[in-house]
Image (cartoon, rainbow, N blue to C red; front, side):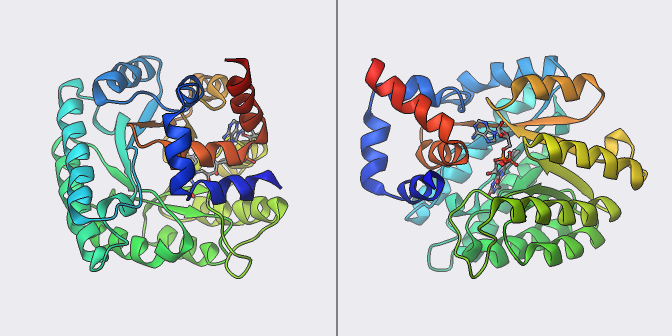
Length: 307
Ligand code: FDA
């Protein structure tokens, strides 16, 4: 019941200001956010890489309101590419971008987001790495998949994300699997209406398994973005059934969530990529993490009263 309320709050500008300014918020936020700057975050990346984990880096930001802000978001990623260059990690450190931070929702935003994303994908390719386009709310899916298809003409390794809670996603998986794409499958983190998305958690999980089966049977590279132990077990079974070697798919989890499990899977020889978010604009990302697990909210509220 609490999840949808927190998700609604994640879009409130007033709450964003209050929560972001509260000094007690910081220690809770740092559980999920690796740092505020690339200088603070790169040692975390190096440490994860040294311990056999891979990363995808997200410079926090979403829903920009003017083109100049979108350019600043693009430039933050171009700066990240320069910071990654000397580390020579190649695809072990890739990047995830939210097209809403590149201007997708502005007038003419589809073309603007494509242009900004192209600059980042080109720079990433220069240092031998890749980019995955995060998926946001359902109104953006057509535009995001079209931008993904366009980017793949020159950079076929560009990744897409699909959300099992959306009714449309099985069809999207069929298209992407046949096209040989890198596809991250997640349950979905936004508040969506019953006209487009399953509302029942169990239905979302069942849809996840159907989508996973399509991706594992296809010609692409599935990226399993979930912390759910049952889905991890199902992935391992499907990999066997479809004859996929350990390097023909990968697990992905969020920084700060089920860290021991991340290390366990890597130690078993799995490719394990940690989605590592950093920056100052953490409000929306942080609120979605609270919404996923009420226990996180309790932890957050407790920290407010015990300070
Ligand atoms: P579920 O929520 O059922 O959780 C399973 C178990 O994992 C829980 O019982 C708990 O132990 C642990 N867990 C899960 N979330 C937790 C949390 N916040 N705090 C503490 N423990 C937690 N969504 C989206 O809409 N677009 C996107 O582009 C992405 N990208 C993305 C990348 C990666 C790498 C991951 C892992 C996830 C995303 N997501 C996303 C988020 C995704 O849609 C989903 O909301 C979360 O992954 C939670 O779903 P689970 O599959 O983990 O299962």
